[in-house]
Length: 177
Image 1 (cartoon, rainbow, N blue to C red):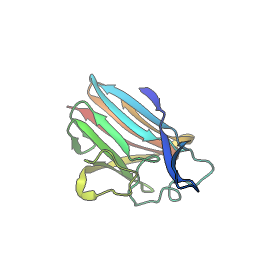
Image 2 (spheres, rainbow, N blue to C red):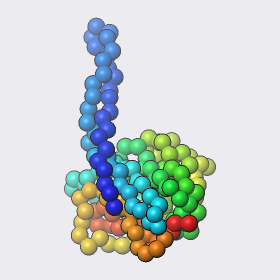
Image 3 (tube, rainbow, N blue to C red):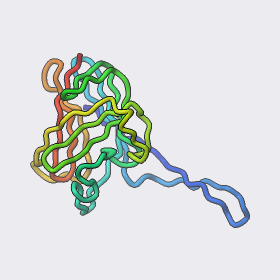
């Protein structure tokens, strides 16, 4: 698995007292990262914002149960695959998708949407979903301060997509076709 930090800077446009426009750059609060896994020679890449726990209640608090979550910070998380996949029960043609989840106390749902570039889940449209599949939820062996998404190779064409944060690890098997 390769992780590459993404340096993204946002800009705020303001108007001075004299009526002049200026741009003020500011660094993001949550770092952004690109992580990849190679399974059966095919690359699967995830781009996402990595928020910190910072003492907050994460699931059932900051991230409500039963609602579509961008699965990260800032823009929606993006999944890009160089090959057709099966993620759980969902057939995923090669390409780029936005990745959302619907966290639950005992089960999560992974959502892939055909609109890859979205700001969070603010304009999420279920009609544009490629599909949904269930994820297994487990207790993390130790709390994780920062959201971590990984693509892990298992054997042959098999792998695992994992989302881990705080005391929760959600996972779903994937197969390269």
